[in-house]
Image (tube, rainbow, N blue to C red; front, side):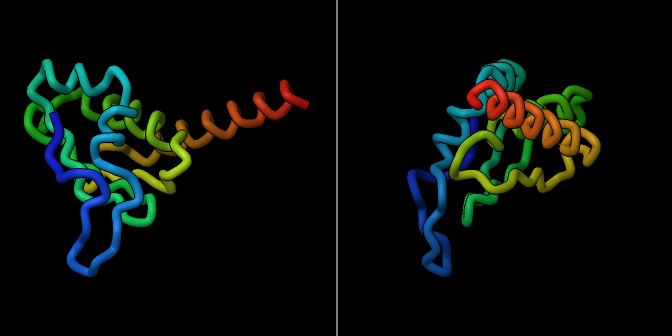
Length: 117
């Protein structure tokens, strides 16, 4: 489940959101179904300039699996061309997990380049 508006909603300043909230939810893969089953809520707060601001709420609050859920979401979302960064506003993604995923994505890109070249 997610909270949020529609496609390219406008903010107070008239800025357009870079990516729709619906696309964000669609791109988090199997995480969305798990969240739904456990009454978790993904609150997509903002997507301006490709910086996705998310809060995990509902059943996610206090859940010991929330950092792993955030890590999986971060991995999937950071692979989208429109996404420059993903910020979990309540600190659901510890910095060491963010660094691990950033390194994994860099390694995968390097492997793909080597395989293609």
